[in-house]
Image (cartoon, rainbow, N blue to C red):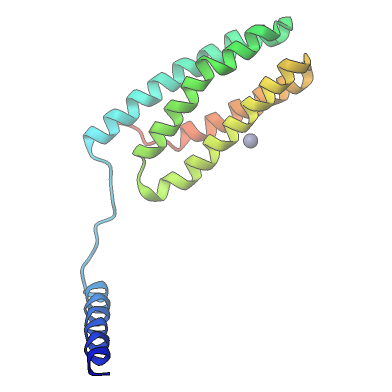
Length: 149
Ligand code: ZN
């Protein structure tokens, strides 16, 4: 019993210290990006913009031509790189900015799966819809990326 009490006292002391520590009147600076972070983010963004550009030209052309092998190759090649870049970039964002970016990353990823599925079936309408949705979500993602100063 004595041993139990002393452990309990110890736990209580810890809890008290924790609560006091948390309520200390310490003005927290809102987190901001360092120049180095902004630079890294900018590099990913430049890559993504380049791939976006190719997507609007090469992927749309392949879809229009019903060239489904190229559509599928493009999704599994350049656009997989685009998704990786989006994922890395998201990891560089401030903690509060990450959840919405991650959600858009998942959206784009899902729409690209739709494009790939459409390519397998040779379904042009579904491919166009998937492409348009992916582009829309990608553009929203890009507007949320901080600008390098
Ligand atoms: Zn979407």
